[in-house]
Image 1 (tube, rainbow, N blue to C red):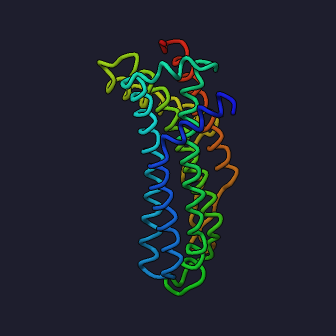
Image 2 (image 1 turned 120 degrees about the horizontal axis):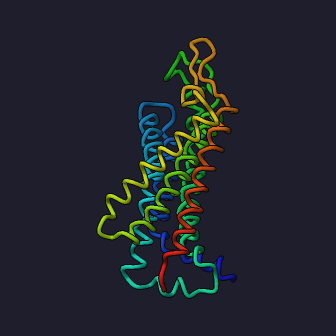
Image 3 (image 1 turned 180 degrees about the horizontal axis):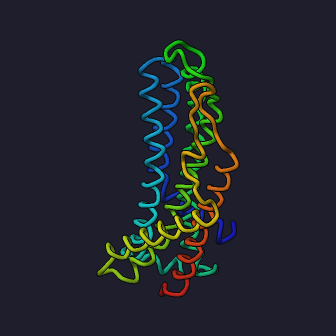
Length: 245
């Protein structure tokens, strides 16, 4: 196994307990929603599933920051920085592992797609209901979730390094990273997609029902991912320049 692959596997192993609990919870709620059939209970189960998945876009980046801090607190960063790889790769491996878990959780949430289909289209529970394609709902949610996960993870990547450089002001430094990143993202989005927002991506029409503007969605996701990758690259560069063995 190459050193880079070994780094990635190591980070995944560190997340195994979190991954096991989150994946089991996600799969369990999704399967339960399908099992109970169209009802108020299914609607609540799907709401709980949506809240759980949405929360992981914030929880996983927080765990990323904690993971980096723990390496320095326990002194194990010496081993990471002495590996025959670029100095930025230990941090990037952590980012990749946490983002991978988020993607896996969202894919597992697709187990509830048949339940969403039954709830929206196959019963009179919400009748009358304009036609809604559950797959379109899931794809739109995937784009929004992945964009949020990548962006917040990139902020966590930079914040983790800044907290190491300024331990006395780690709270203030983290807030500065989040505020600056949010401002930069809003400016980039306003420049590339002026006037674009969630209302331009997801639209409701009383006659035709729920509609999705996939062009706006893809463009918005591309801008968010581009800003996220730029921040991740900056965090990796800063880590490589400042990390000490």
